[in-house]
Amino acid sequence: MIIDAHAHFLPADYPEGAPECFPRMEPTDGSTDRLLVFGATRFRARDVFFEAERRIEAMDASGVDAEVVSPMPPLLRYDLPAADGLSLARHVNDFAATLAQAAPGRITSLGIVPMQDPDAATAELAAIRDAGLDGVEIASNVLGVSIGDERFLPFFQEAERLGLALFVHAMPAAMDRLPPSAAGTYVVGIEGMLAAASLITGGTAAACPDLRVSFSHAAGGLAMVLPRANYFWGGVWNEEEPNPEKAFAHTDGPSPLDYARRFYYDSMVFDRRALRYLIDLLGADRILVGSDFPAMPREEPIAKTLRSLDVSPAEWEDISSRNVLRWLGHDPFGVSSVVE
Image (cartoon, rainbow, N blue to C red; front, side, top):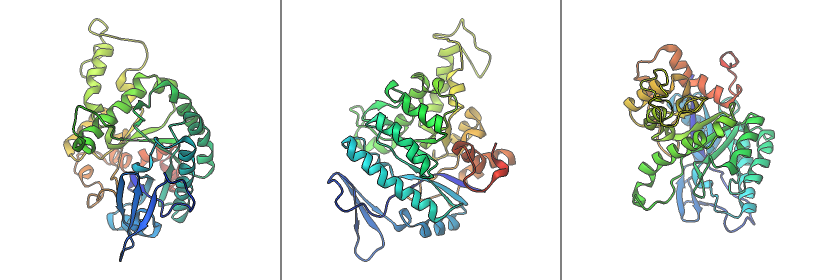
């Protein structure tokens, strides 16, 4: 069984009379595609983004048994007025629930919340759970503020209390040190790393030990800096015992690597050597199959690069399906035998 944990959807339409700052989905001549118009964003979306039947056909063609679908990142517009952000989130979440209901056992959906208003975002989590959604997608920063900032801690605590999964999607933020053309490559890697590191260093991971969170694109560069963080924490080389005499800032409690091994990471890193390192460092029980479909084409067959690695049958079963079920916290796809 293979579950794609990183796939996206777009609502087919938006309500008439919506605020001018809402997106639009405009028809395209001679095609079932629609054009997403949202501020400066212009994105041509194939019908697989919003038609459950087309998604099932695409899954079957790629050997995918089920998908976890989250809203396309352009919908994570935290610059909207808070009230409009909440209205947009509720519309997107209604569509997410409808999409999942159209294909039970094949599609499970995540919603969104207006993180620009942490109190409203926190209050909305119960409605997301009650709508049958399995979790929430958030961006890696909120208007340039780290998600590990203390103002967001009540949100993470409530998600933990309600048992909702969180998917942190890297969201490029403008920076002076790299050109705009680097936003989709280097900046995505930086953003993923900063988001995960902020949850560790800001205290969220310590305060929410049962929080289930995954990161898009394997949290960017996080895995490369974790050994250095572990050394500065406890003088640790190659997972040997901590050596406080060599440490720069040793403290009691879990190490940075210990915290990082509580998170989940999708496999969208584009290279078998990078995947091998992620499995070796973080564990086969932390890696999820991800494709970014249909924003990006899937490997054919799905997870081709992961399949090329020398992993045991048990590790492959973890990566291909068990881990995503653990991340979601229940068994939405009818595989009760693998849920712990």
